[in-house]
Image 1 (cartoon, rainbow, N blue to C red):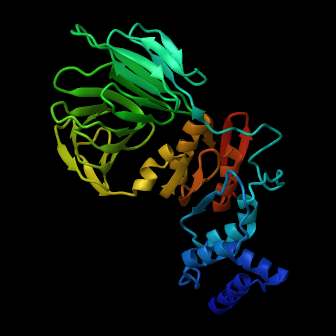
Image 2 (cartoon, helix red, strand yellow; image 1 turned 45 degrees about the horizontal axis):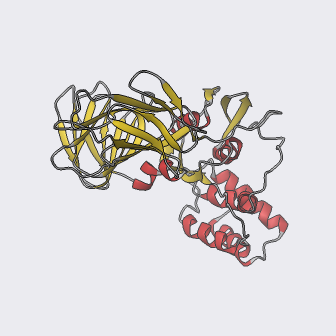
Image 3 (cartoon, rainbow, N blue to C red; image 1 turned 60 degrees about the horizontal axis):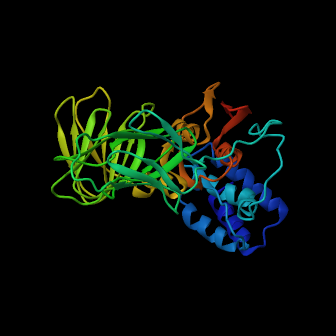
Length: 381
């Protein structure tokens, strides 16, 4: 279909005068566009068209909207196909029955999203499961009283003792499918993403506030110029006085990424001694087994989307997305056939069942088969 014809059909759709046959032709064209970036109509402003189409859709009142917006970057036209075929379904938050062409759900229960789940390991080695624990005092350590507050997160309050002989260490860990918030004894708040562990003292003493991180966490550090806050993770140490930042240090990710939202931080690579100063809007990228730290401009919304209850992808490749889904839905992902590791852009809420996310990803030319907690990724043909 040539450029002029495509523009005419899109305009007719926006005007509500598109016939069923013309709509079918338009959808077929967008399907072909999803596999051919060099179409002669690439001059079209798909982002603007998409906004206009969304504005044409009927608004339905609901208490908890559940709209997924996720599309392959390599074919902006697929956005329109997604809107034409699926937008009303997602806006109304109705659950679509199993499609004969989809392999997402195969006579099996859907996989639910994660939630507030964590385990607290106390100084004596005992553990407390926090998920459904009622509010109130959790434990009395030598240096602090640990409570679960009205908002459902853990708070450390320093005991009013004259002398502290030894600082005790606690560890807060989230499983796959878990996330949790803790307020440390200095007032610093730390949000832990799934499959994350944070080790910290029950109270801070001395010349620094040192914690150790594996996984991913977002920090809002209480200011204290006399006692810098340091986060040790992998092969780096991040030093701050008071600021907001995110660290992603998962062992199955290719890079360790530190993203700064507010204030300033200094990052030191332990193996090389290289140091970099990070300013807001930047991320520091450290590659394991390589010397040096790279500073890059970054999308801040993507970096902390998980903290705000979303997945947000900015030119993210399929396998990177699937690693996030593995951690949040506690699944195992396998690949069969020649699966192209294409890039995607868009966002979706983390409170969606897994099948809803996979159905949208299927628009990008992949298929999924679910067997228990194992998701197998196939090429579409």
